[in-house]
Image 1 (cartoon, rainbow, N blue to C red):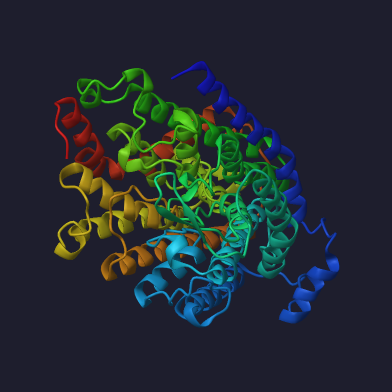
Image 2: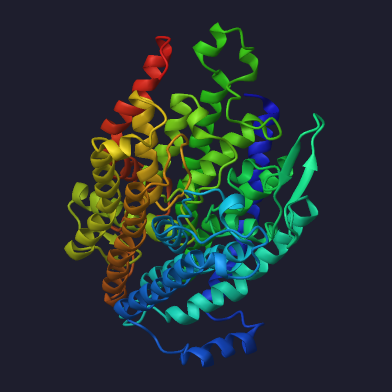
Length: 565
C-alpha cells in the first residue's frame, strides 16, 4: 500500500460524497414531482399508457405495477435475443441466442443483476446491446429507485393509504435523472476513448505480422448507464478490463464514482423525504464505513502478495498483480472491487479468481451482507431500511420498549416480513450452491477443485441472488443447469425480496406517526450507527461463515502452508 494509492481512494470517495449531497436533494425533488422541465414529454407517456400520475396506489397496486412492467421487459428482451439473427444492426451476422442463455440473460438484465454467461463482442448484435440490454439497464434502475422512493414515503407521514404512483415515479426517474446523467457521462466516455460507433469490426495487422479482429460498437452510452444504474453488464466480455471499456485510470475513477454516487445520494433523498436530514446521513455513514473497511481489507491483502509468489522470486513490493491491470494499479482495483460488489453493480476491472484468498473473500462477503453497502440504485436504500427496522427491534428488546423508527411503531407484522426478506438470500444462495456441489453436471463447470472450486460456485449463486452480476472467474456458466438455476436465483433475489419490503412499507404508511419522546431511541447518532452495523454483520453475514470457512478461509490457510488448488 502506498500514500499515492490512498490519495487516489480518498479523492474518488470525496468526489462521490461531494456529488451525492446535491444529487440527493435533486432526486427527492424528482420524486416529489417538483422537477418538470420535460413536462410535455412526460405527459405524452402518461397519455399513451392511459395513466393518471396523480392517482395514488396502495402497496399492492404499486408492487403489481412494478411486476407488470418487469414481466413485459423480460418478454421483450427474450424475444430480441432469440430473434437477433433476423433483426437489423447486426453487421457480424450473429445468430439468435440459445433458449437457456436467452432466459438467463433476460432475467439478468430485468432484475438489475446483469450476470453475463456470454461474451458481448462475440454473441450480441448492436441492436441487442442497445434496444435490449441498454434499455433494460435504464428500466431496472428506474424500478429500484422508484421502489426506494415509495418505501421512503411510508416514513414521512402517518395514516397514508398510498405510496405514490409507480408509473409516475418510474417515468420521472428515467426522464429527469438517469437519461440526463447517462448522456453527459456517455459523452465524457467518448472523449476519453470509449467507442460509440455503428461501424463493423476492424481487422488489423499486428507487429508480428498476424491479424487481429478489433471489436467496435455503440459502447460508450451503454457503459455510462451500466455504472450509473449499478447494472454492471459490460459491452465487451471482460468488462472494464477491456481497453475500449476501461481505457485508462481516469475512466476507471469515473466508473467508480458513477456506480457509487446514486446509491449514496439516495440516503440524502431519504432524509429530505422524511424531513430529517440526520437520518439519511446516519445511513450514509454506515455505508461509507463498510466501503472503506472493505477497500482497506482488499488493498492490504493484495499488496501483501502471496508466499508462493515470493518463493518463486517475484518482487513482493509489487503485491499480487495477477488478474489486475497495471493501468489501474492495486488501489483503484481495490476501490473498484469494494464499490462494485458493495453497490450491487457487478462491473469488474480485475479478476477475483486471481486475488489472494482473503482478497477474494471480501467482495463475496460484501454481497452476502445483503447488497446494501451502499447497494444497488434504490435496492440498497430499501434493503438498508429493512436492517434499520431490525436494529430498532433488537434495541427495543434490550430495553423493554416497543421499537419505533421515525415515529412508526415496529411490531410483529413488520418484523416477520423483514425476516422473510432477509432470509431470501441465504436460502437461495446456500440451497442452490449445496445442490450444485453434489450434481456432476454442475461440478463439471468448475475450473478448480477444493476450496477454490467451492468459492467459484458459491460466488456465482451469491452474485445472482444478490443481483450483483460479477463473476469470480473460472466457472463455465453457459450450461442448461447453471443458466436456469442462476436465473431463478436472480428472480428470487430481486422480486421475492422486494414484495415483503413493499408490504412493510404499506403497513408502516398506514400507522400514525408518534412524536419523539424522552425514551425514544435516537436513530441518527453514532450509537445507532454502531448497532445497525452490528445487526448487518450478524444477521446479514453470520449464516455464511461456515461456507466461507470451507472456501476462501480454507484456501488461505492452505496457501500459507504452500499448497495450491
